[in-house]
Length: 129
Image (cartoon, rainbow, N blue to C red):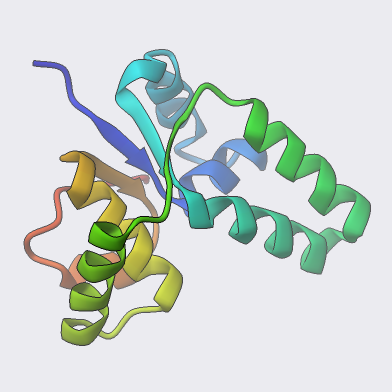
């Protein structure tokens, strides 16, 4: 069985900015039927790039993100409950709780470079180096 991956916002920004690990993200996107992202990542990309580079760059990054061959995990009651459980048990941001929950919900390994996720022992993870 092929490895399912959920791309964290940090992975997608790594690709956008061509940082170390971008090649791994590109490789993941080569099999889109196995590559997921959490709905909240759309907002994170938009606001982070907007904040750092201006509104035009943020909106462009958002449109580019939507064009990627990703399967989106959208908000749902089961995802909300899973994210709340993770947030209650771990010291991490609200967005990261949703993203970790999305990875668990679809049975994917989370591809990221965010040290906050390391505290979640029952989350399959791959660190981008």
